[in-house]
Amino acid sequence: MDEKTERGGISIELEHIFPIIKKWLYSEKEIFLREIVSNACDAITKLRRLNSLGEADADLSSAKIWVELDKDAKTITVIDSGIGMTEEELKKYICQIALSGALDFIQKYEGSENDAQSTGIIGHFGLGFYSAFMVADTVDVITRSYQGGPVVKWTCGEDGNYEITPDYEDEENYLGDFGTAVVMHINEEGEEFLSAYRIKEILNKYCAFMPEEIYFDDGEEHTHKDGDGKDVPDEDKPVNDTHPLWLKNPSDCTEDEYKDFYRKVFSDWKEPLFHIHLKADYPLNFKGILYFPRIGSEFDSLEGQVKLYYNQVFVADNIKEVIPDYLLMLKGVLDCPELPLNVSRSYLQNSGYVQKISQHITKKVADKLNSMFSTDREGYEKIWRDLKTFVEYGSLKDRKFYDRIKGSVLLETTEGSFRTIDEYLETAKEKHENKIYYATDVTAQSNFVKMFRDAGIEVAVFDRIIDTQFFGVIEETREGVKFARIDAEVADVLKGEGEKTEFPAVAELFKSAAGENVKVSFEQFKDEGTPAVLNVPEEMRRMSDMMKLYRMGGDFPVEQTLILNTASPLIRKLNDMTSSAGEGEENKEAKALARQIYLLASLSQRQLTADELVEFLSGSYDLLNKTV
Image (spheres, rainbow, N blue to C red):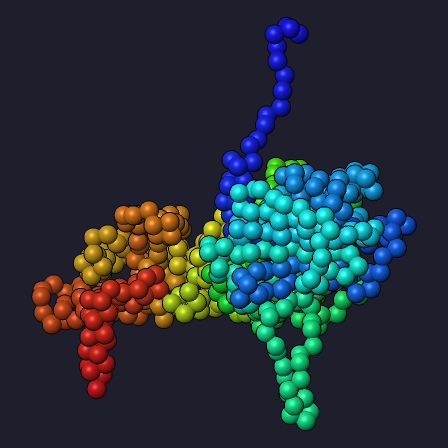
């Protein structure tokens, strides 16, 4: 190397970096309390670990964390009965930014950073403590090591300058034999946190399942009436559940426990359809519970919430790197203690581990659905309408997911029965091979439904927007299979026998009644009671629906065909009426009937315009009056 080459390390001036940490360390100021309480939890966890290794013999039978609010003094204090620090450790871990005491502990007593899970230690970056300065202008750390020795106090201002008092007299009685108290003197910008409600809200959000008991003291005396009507102090209760349900073995959990946990975490009093208890060991190492909520509509289903935890500490909702976005329609919790988090913990670093978690969860969800279908088909059919939107959306987003669950996809028929795709196609093989007929509005298309029912053909119900997107997946993956709405064509099985007849005069009459954009043709139906049907080709209608769905603007030109039934006595009568020339009363009546028949046929395809509805009602009343 050239003798002139100079080496060195980048230096950081505290007065410049401290304001950056204070303002930009976390996106939300409220996270400061999560970080300080997490540190307190780590302090107890470390001491428990030392006890188990024989390195310490501390009494942790009453170990806990206290969060205390003093509105008058404008302080928030977090106290733990954990490992504590000596003066030397205080200087090492608190006075050096980003030197992680947690990692130092793991490397000393566990051997590697990957052993963090065995200890349950939360800390990682050595920056969490400094989040206190996001809301405080001064922070005090009062601590005594489990090894004994004097209490030490460290005081630091928002400028980064600190003082250490080596033999501090703990007049406030923060500490017992050992532990640490962090006293945050809240600044003006952080005064919103001097609220008992706000602190409870943060503790419930981030610390509800931390592994050490957390108590909150808001400085007020809380009482209740005893049996004699006297006011007695409320019993102190932890604000967290140290052993959440997801840590237990599924075989040890009852259905009532799963339901209670769901109501507690999501404040949803509608019982979920079912749950999946996830417990993945090496190499993935994560646990969780996913719930399928009851879906009131296809839009409700998009309001899921999957909470992500790191060693029982809440990180964020609905992180898409861990949960495929279609699974975010579910509700649940996931605890992934080996997540490759960045400093903020709200964002993940790129990792194959994260992708494997996502794939594993997808597989478990598909396995659960297939298992329910195989072992309890009747129960599965009862909840299919709630499951359908989730299954269809997942299939649209992830073809592998569809491949896993395609055998458990059901079609609901207009008769209320359920068929798999294979079952439907097997039944249809003789009458309409590889074609699946469906209705989008059973009420509006009831006449078509009746015609198909009379012909012995099952009609599937696709009455949600996503349904018509989903069956495109089936058409792509099953060669030759096509879906057709029951009003898109006149199926061969609906046609009667005999030669096709056309009535030219009637055709001209209906062209005038329907308008230039509607074609007129003739077919002989088996059903004599239906004079006409209006058909829109399947592909054209799908394109029109897609343009409306995505608000692409403009009107897609849709070709409509009015098919007149030559077996209908009404059409034959119109033929007789129009065979005589002239503009007499009979011809006017024929035009009125043709217009009324066209409007009736249109009702199954679309909503009538205001003018058309007025015309239709008026024409109906005229026809009724003629019968009186």
